[in-house]
Length: 339
View 1 (tube, rainbow, N blue to C red):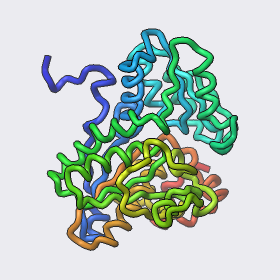
View 2: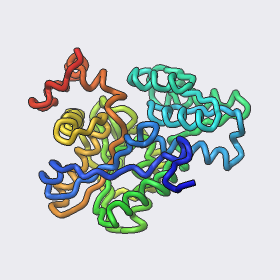
View 3: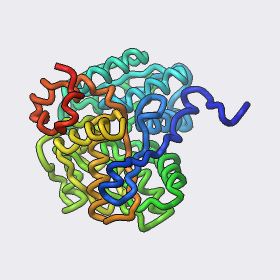
């Protein structure tokens, strides 16, 4: 069979395009490149980690035919897992904070997952969604809690796929890589590979309000900057196993109003329809480009489509309630078409 034919859902994960963002590249005098992870078959960068954590469980003998995969997730990892479980014949149970978008919850249920929204509480609380997922998995036979935050199969996915793809697509010309982190897998795995190939590559962690990682990188303390963010699935209150020992050179703090502004700029100027975490990543790439100066190549991640958030991001009432409508550029306000 032709090598151009992919083998099922699993064979289509990864190998996403690297897109040059024309207007932002012209603005900065750099090449601003974005990895189009929303073109993964499950719609997000988390497809890579989902495939790797399940296959690691299989290789370790923890998961057998007909088994159950359990995870605590803000959404995208769960969607990736639901796809992988459907393709491999496993049951899928997802615990998630009840603050997440209805689009994600509906997608998970359509994919056959048993979705269990629970109150959003701190990681230190026994009722945190991750702990509930762990505890439920322990009650089942032939089941695995994939533990995306501290299972380094997550970052291995990016060390073995995302990093090599970026290095090959830029023909080694990448000067900096930046993205936000929730589990730490994308940033750490990609950074580890790129640094091995080219030690001069600058790795910059992009952080939303309410996360401790900006201060951790800058000052070595686990203290939050800001009180919370409208972005989903990124930011952190601790150092995960995936992020531990990652070769990070710097960090930037990106406020929500800048992330939202970039979501609309990407749609209006580039025709790219992505969520707030992608807006944050691209804003960080622009900041890094401006700090490094013209002539550099900066790579970031477009995590997922805005279709998973459109009833929020493109709703006047939601934006007003969050104090973010003013962040929508004047020439983009016609795009806010929902009440």
